[in-house]
Length: 80
Image 1: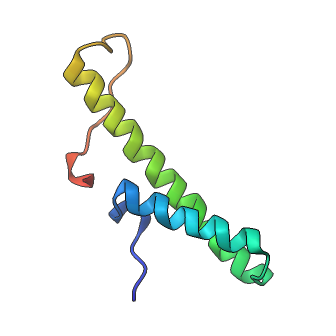
Image 2: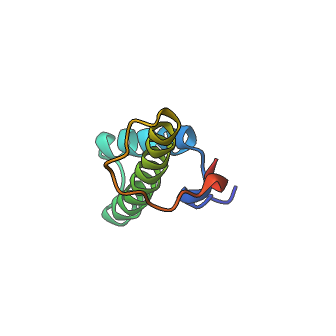
């Protein structure tokens, strides 16, 4: 099965995969090369998840009208 790009996964899917990567790495059975590859994937998943979370927080703030002091950034609704 092809691995999806982190930005194409849902927030929940990214967190689930990140959790699996952490578990694999904690077991200590991966080679150095495999560990580095998984670490790189984990960083990408964490970044994509953080971005999605920030967008969700901004959307809630906009909907609630409570965040008028914060600078707004582009909101991409297609990431759902």
